[in-house]
Length: 170
Image 1 (cartoon, helix red, strand yellow):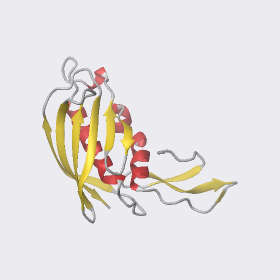
Image 2: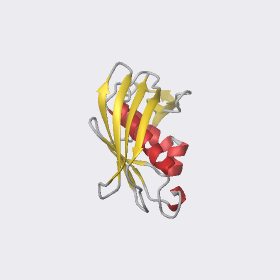
Image 3: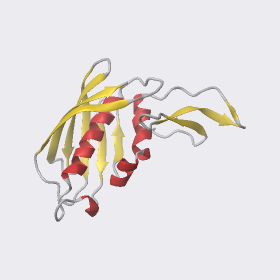
Image 4: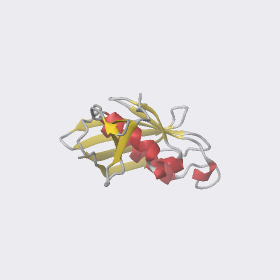
């Protein structure tokens, strides 16, 4: 659902590092270009290619038009003290969840770019020695700005943090 054929040619956008499929290479020649990627394709390709996302181990469990779920797997190297997941790792998950929610129902411009404009994050409870899950939804879509929310929960659905963010697509 998220991956494309390994034969597809990729080009990188210099501003965001997003890699998009531009066509299929056959015998050294370009064939008819493939359908342009949608926003879900953009975020599905971005997440595993981002070095910081990969370093934290964040993965997309679900990318849907109405809801996204990203997961930060438990890793003892992502703690503050003892077994408490670092707030910066949780904030990163919240930011990525907002970004994924903004892209998932978006039309994709020829050169996709995006940036977090603002994000407010409230921590509700510590996450201790557990995976942390980001559940994101777009609340309102304008021409280029998307208002989103992200709930950060543990696997037992206990609220760890809540974020409201504005993401600019362009």
